[in-house]
Image 1: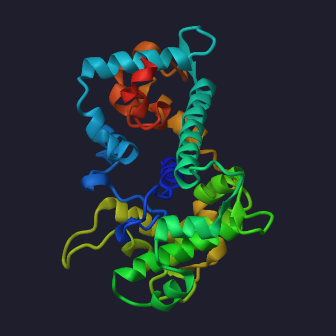
Image 2 (image 1 turned 135 degrees about the vertical axis):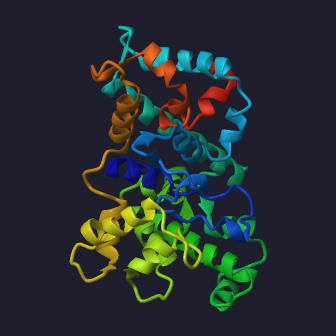
Length: 324
């Protein structure tokens, strides 16, 4: 359960928009899992497939909902045949893990290609910061953003976003020439994927949750980032669980706060393999005969779980016409 929640944390990292950013689209990671539509992942110890569907599909859930169960099952069957590389009629944990990694990397590759062409239409070898700044933020320059950073109007959101983008850009720029190659631009977009930019995720998470700016995250800040219950309202079970996680596992030194290193251990655990965790989760949910591998029939019977997982590229593969 804990590993699966960490998987969602990692998958939940937001990516940069292709157009001029809107104030409400601050591309920040959401590092605590709030239940979608107040539905818990496990209700009375029973798995709730709507959780996977909404968490992983997001807006794509609406597209998937337009498919009939028969059509979604048919399309999932085609994907199962691709996952079963040795054609032995079984999907093993390793095959499922490989497919999840493939799906994730395909999304990242496609996203990078799209963003690079959008921001570098002339297909130059490098994209200078000045060009990116003008394209995304228009007339706002860095000095103006600095002046407005602490204001309370809409300019604040743009200024904060520009500041984050500038920091990401500098971290991704390995040769320090203030212009990014396609590879460096990939690290700028997906800071969590490159070793030299991963720490940016930690800094952004800290800044996002640390409301009083004291350089550490209190329990109230940790919970308050995703839950703001009305006075007198009973806390959901998942909130109680998160409080226990904070005290028992997140706060390593027991001082009541999370410092930078504790946040890093939390959101970028060194020994966590998200693809393997998701593979185990899916097998656990669909393996009716408990042989630690899945038949096509077992998968199709649980299609509602799989279309809400990374195994189907968060459901997008089911609506991609060229796959079928």
